Image (cartoon, rainbow, N blue to C red; front, side, top):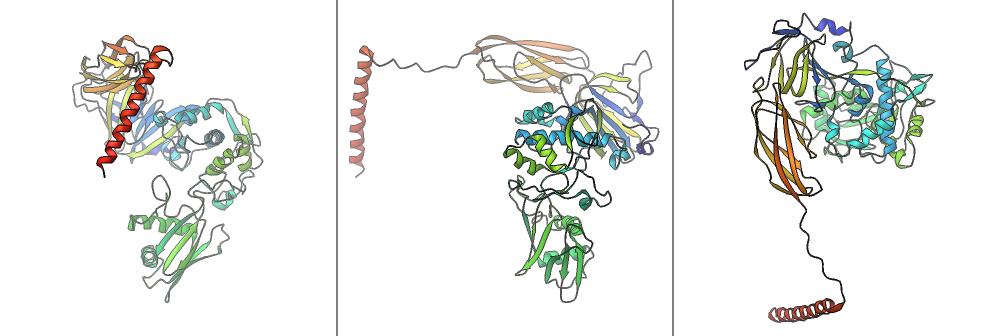
Length: 548
């Protein structure tokens, strides 16, 4: 985390109470007395190939830093820029290659622009570099490793390594959004307090028709809207008869919305309607809003996906016709998708959306601290890692399994190890296949006395972390027949054990090939075939006869 940031006021003389549910002897560092408390932040540093999994969040590459702030636990993932990019989850990895590469370059540029400026928002409050949500860039750690198409995104990041969008020799503020609805906005239209940037200009984006949010529609009853605007304090509860849009009274790019009735009239701008009524509608009428749509979720992502809409009233129903999703500035992700399908390259796409900018290679290997989560009551972290204090000193050289870290108030957290931690490691293979066909999968059942990192060889099984007690894993037989010695190795906090199981891998059975036509065999086969044909014909005649 950044030193001297505003996060310092969130931390007192922070300590972590090591409250263990089992007897555990901490090994002293360099002959020091066994530790019972340590100053935060604490760090979980991976010591093997397994990513650290945080329950309710994601799997993560690299070290995790956990701090106890005034409002709960803060989780930060520290990793190099290029590794950070692998964890972004901004567009589907199935998209065209050029669109993925354009996204990778834009995301790299945005991260570098962010690193070059003082932190703001949650980054300033908690001391990290960049957040993990749509307020910054959507970061899901190592989750894409489990996606069969994830390799396509990894390839896009690797193919564009070091490539950045620059203007005037510096990385730009590479804003991007989901879909503009046909034309992007000037930066000042969406962010009036910031003004304009020469490279964030309104440009046409005509290739977005594949997006389900290029155009969208929401319908309200007049009674629903009257209830919502009354709760918002915009209406006194009288009859509502008409809702429509007019031009912006404050020269915004979005319209004003007029609510009218026999006794009242109210005007609110579209952005306020989107923010206030959108949230109220989802809370008051969750079965109806957001509306049904052709999305993977079956609904629109928000009640009003953007502030670019028109409203009309027909036969007692209020219809909202809108376009786009997101702020509308910079690169349209769906626009990039459409341009890639038309044969545009990544650089062409980026230079279209970022006026006057160009793509260049910027050397360097920056580190980022990503704010994964804040305000948590507890963190459940599973993996194999070294536990360090805030000064990088080793508190526990090998922590394996699922560890619980709980918030106990400002500056204090409790740390509990997994069941069985600290016991001598014992491994037993309870059951295993004796014979498998080539390429087939078989299940091995294990029993462990303590949590351990389990690896097998040979085979395609990944290394995984197992808890104390019963466990199982799937082993894939090699493609070559033979007798294999399958080695199951378990490494815990206190020792390691290896068991060997022999598995016979056999070739799949195949049906005997028919002899080739010709010679006596061919004549015999022809005779058999004729006989079968006569029998079938006779059988058919009999069936037809009995069905009359």
